[in-house]
Image 1: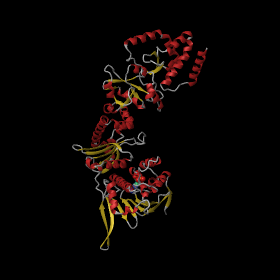
Image 2 (image 1 turned 90 degrees about the vertical axis):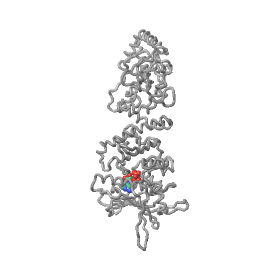
Image 3 (image 1 turned 180 degrees about the vertical axis):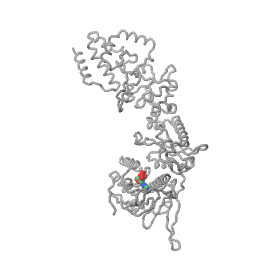
Image 4 (image 1 turned 30 degrees about the horizontal axis):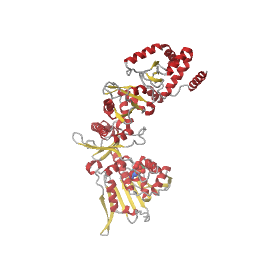
Length: 623
Ligand code: ADP
């Protein structure tokens, strides 16, 4: 007895789009089904390497057209489906390509269909019913799944012993009004040209099965349609851009063109071909823990592994692609693969190759590099940070920052080359945005001295800089940290005298602020602004903010130093208040401190106290 089941909501949406589709590229259903068949054979082949109960066979994909019956059958001897897999894989959209496709469609971004891996459901663009007969090595029996792509499907048990899947498409009636000719999919010449167009590089033979009557006897003829030369084994000059882009989009589930293709053949001690792609945009799950880095691994064109993690360092985890090497044995287990010296050597080659390709992109096509950088800067920066600087030399020249002086990004090298020779540091400032950094009181002196400041606006930035410490032999210095190397000798003396003269009031302010600040000082760096907070040694205030958001980070603490502008009218006013009434300075100190906190982007610790002090101040000033 067949059981009837409902499709999941998302699947229904996609099915509706497929069955009522007005797209011109309906023919891609064949590519999708052949590619599924090829994946299923990969899976079976892979299991057969380690599981003796799953015998390897001559793997093939069969196309059987029937003009009279208006059917097309696509069959494979791959892994098949269990009942559960039929329900989970064909009743629900599980696959990222289809999901992304649905999202695009919902944004009215139509006619993208040919670019997507839209999968099994595309069969409903051409068929009014789809029947799947299958047998998995993990099931006790075979199953038949059947649907007309409306809201439900049926499943029943069938007798079947051969592992694999047979998909029977009952083609739709031709629709002359809309110039829809579905009978073409029962014609051998159309099928041949579609296989050539979309599936020529599929690794397993795609065989056309035609029954002919000869001498009144029915004979079955078999013709292999595809060349089976993987695209990466072709001469570079023989691959068209379109071919490469279709391969990429389909193989790696992207709907944009790749930003960069790296195709490299290495021969000698180590022989391999690598075909690598950098997607223009990071995949939607790139920054989640679910994202898995890795390259596909093949041995002489035969698939071994889908995501080999050892081929890519974490900081290049955005690279997609594959490696095909005759030096890697087909029958190698995953554990051994991990220790495999060849894999390690290839990984090290690839790392250098990717790095040099990125460097030349940066040198020759800045615009393109910026696209790349916008997508993956955090990954590169994190690469320097997490290695405690070990990868600094490898990655530092791929890092760019905006600066206080220009809107464009520059490299550390460009900063160092441009700076005056007597400037002995690379100055940086941290904040939420360019705008907020430029408004920092600490920028006053940098503007006056016309010193360029790197703008660190990503959370990871300062952590990375702290790990780097220097670029070449030039140290990094935060303009938000206590340091007086920008003060001229005469000014230093002047500041010292002023601090001495105002010793008592500074002490009183410090006392009022208790353990909130480590010190209260007169500032050399403020021009327009009255006060600012700077960090002492150790972790900076920006880092404190980020670390405090993390779990188990309650103990982090940045030393804060309150700096007051001695030339500001406010300081004169403070002095007057202090002379009149020493007690009053407590309220003023609190207001000053809170104001500085606000400028630094901190929340006010006690808003009521702050507000009460302000109110009191207003009342006093009217007296
Ligand atoms: P995908 O892009 O993941 O292949 P599909 O909708 O085309 O998405 O297929 C859904 C899932 O169904 C596949 O991921 C695979 O697990 C399974 N599947 C599809 N076709 C076959 C097949 N011929 N043999 C075995 N499993 C298949």
